Image (tube, rainbow, N blue to C red):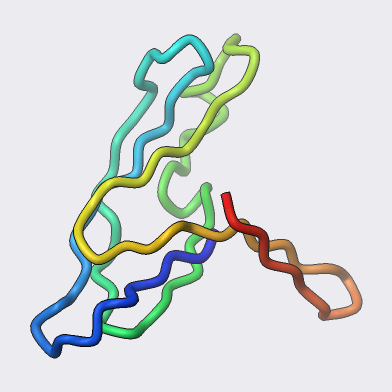
Length: 91
């Protein structure tokens, strides 16, 4: 995913968390997000945040990622194709 800090203030670094949540609402894991500088962005892999995602998800039918924090704009999903092209989509 791509997270964006749209704050223009020099002291406006982002602070936040990511939660891995089962579709029934059960929290499977939570991690701190890396700080993002004002007007910056970070591309973060789900497996970088939750290397043990397969174990955490287990028998759950599916999962969601929830982002909370300060100075974090709507996240984008990021897909990179074999030919080097990519696409971004708002969650």
